[in-house]
Image (cartoon, rainbow, N blue to C red):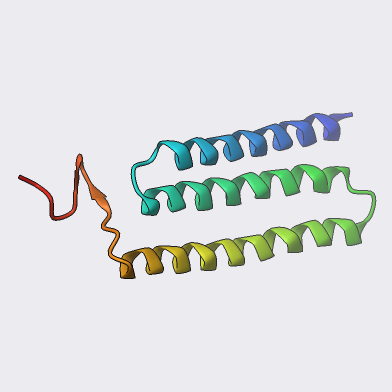
Length: 106
């Protein structure tokens, strides 16, 4: 019974971080801050979801699979974030500095 409450709390917290990452992606001004919001919040959200599901897993192999899925997502999301940001920088998309775009201050 106690494990179910903890599991539900972890899953709800994970969903909250997914929602926060989505709002950050929609609200932030440039690709770099959007990538940061999505990568950080979604990694934490997935970790909390995986931890919540691990408490409900019926076997050790299922728990290990959930942990490996989270580890794989950590590595791939960091790599994908770097590649997208690097390509955006090479394409000439400047980061937003304060209220102005880089190089366009009066």
